[in-house]
Every structure is written in C-alpha cells, then in structure tokens.
Amino acid sequence: MDLKLQNKVVIVTGGAKGIGEGIVQVLASEGAIPVIVGRNAEDNQKVVDALTAQGKEAFQVAAELTQPEASEKAVKAVLEKYGRIDGLVNNAGVNDGVGLENGSYEGFIASLHKNVVHYYLMAHYALPALKASKGSIVNISSKTADTGQGGTSAYAASNGGRNALTREWAVELLKYGIRVNSVIVAECWTPLYEKWIETLPNPQEKLAAITANIPLENRMTTAEEIANMTVFLLSETSSHTTGQLIYVDGGYVHLDRALANS
Ligand SMILES: NC(=O)c1ccc[n+]([C@@H]2O[C@H](COP(=O)([O-])OP(=O)(O)OC[C@H]3O[C@@H](n4cnc5c(N)ncnc54)[C@H](O)[C@@H]3O)[C@@H](O)[C@H]2O)c1
Image (tube, rainbow, N blue to C red):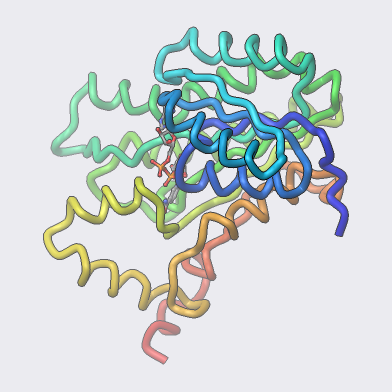
C-alpha cells in the first residue's frame, strides 16, 4: 500500500525514545520527514543521525514541553526549516503516579502539564500550517482513561483529556478537512514502561501476569505496531477516518477476561 507520505513533514513529540521513536522510524521508512520534538537534544540527534546515515531525512527540535512557551517555539523552528507541517503526533508524556490518596494540588497540575497541556498547545500552534496542508493529527493515549490503574489520577485524567480532545478537534476541524484520531496503547515495552514496572514490588512476576492477560498472543504490543497504525492514520489512505479512538492492544481492553484462562 502506498501511503503517499513522501516528503511530508510530520512532528512527533517525544520521538527520541519508545513509541515516539517507533513512529519516527516508520515515517522515515515511508519517505516522510519526521521531526522529533523532545527534551533531550542529544537523544533526539542520535535518532536523526542514524536515519541520516541510512540516507533518510529527519530533523529535531529540543523542547521541554512542560514549559508552555516551548510548543510555540518548536512549531516556529519547524516552519523556519521546512515552511510546512503535514502532520502532528502528540505523544510525549509520563505515567507519573500522582494518586488520589498520595497526590497534591501541585503534583496534579504538574502532571497535566506533562501529559495533556502540550497536546493542546502543539495542536494550537501547528493549526495554521495544518490548515494550509490539510494535514492530520494523531494523539497517542492510554487505556488508563477507560480502565483506571490506581494511584495515577492525573495521568488517567490526562488520557481522558487526550481522548476528549480527539473528538472535540475532529469536530472543530471538519471544516478544514483535518482529521484527528487517537491510538490507544495498553501495554507496550518502552523505556517508560520499564521504569514503571521497576517501581512495583515484584516486577518480573507482575510483567508475566500482565502479558498472560493480553488476549492476542500473550505478549506486549511493540512500538512498531503502534507506529504502523499511527502512520496509517496520518496518511491519506485513511481519508474518511476521523474522531476515532483506535485500540492497538491485542484485545486487552475489550475482549473477554476469561480468555486469559482458556
Ligand atoms: N508504554 C506504554 O505501555 C504506554 C501505554 C499507554 C500509553 N502510553 C503513552 O505513550 C506515550 C509515549 O510513551 P513511551 O512509553 O514511549 O515513553 P518513553 O518515556 O519511553 O519515551 C518518551 C519520550 O518523550 C520524551 N518526553 C517525555 N515528556 C516530555 C516533555 N515534557 N517534553 C519533551 N519531551 C518529553 C522523553 O524524553 C522520551 O524521549 C506517552 O504519552 C504515554 O502516555 C504508553
């Protein structure tokens, strides 16, 4: 299938690691120009250099997205370099465990800035360029908005926000032909996931219990599998798909729990 993404400029926040990096790799393999917007210039550049060495084009902008002015600056830097933006993937975030019992006002608000405020700001500042290109937006989100996880109120609220914004923007942007969708992730092995599981008392046992409950093939989703769906949604090939929350999770959220024992 030709996704017709040749030379399309697509911003991926948090594109230096994990799911974001997977999306950057698939975009580059489709001939698009991924632009990593992430906090660590060195990490970003490593990915850009590896792609450049393979004859592919990529670019990076160092930005700490919890700072409200960073999103505007990042969008400006991309426009200065390429003069266009064809797609935006909002992906940067962290499951930071700000709970109801053990949280605070400051922790809750800070987590919203880590996980959802910059989704809004990146889309807000990229919008004029997306209108010009009739581009597309994909918001990466988490199952915690549907299932809860316990002890992570702000992250769950942020993911509920990411999903609501997907529907809200899909409606607001109909008039521009800009499509907005979410890819919902449940269990995907990344540096963030590894860090999270290491905070639990018996990480290896917990991991085995989780994967045993993933209906399709009892395994974690790969970053590439999340990326393949994301890149499809960015492309014209999904031209009549908007406002959708798509679960790339091996059936984890919706299939019968009894499957784990069969
Ligand atoms: N891994 C999973 O199983 C899982 C499950 C559900 C949802 N998600 C979502 O996927 C997204 C990516 O997760 P991941 O597991 O790939 O994470 P990760 O930590 O492995 O990679 C995230 C990258 O984004 C960067 N980043 C994070 N916050 C940033 C900020 N404020 N400013 C600039 N850069 C920032 C990090 O430095 C890192 O390079 C997150 O939004 C998370 O909510 C992941």
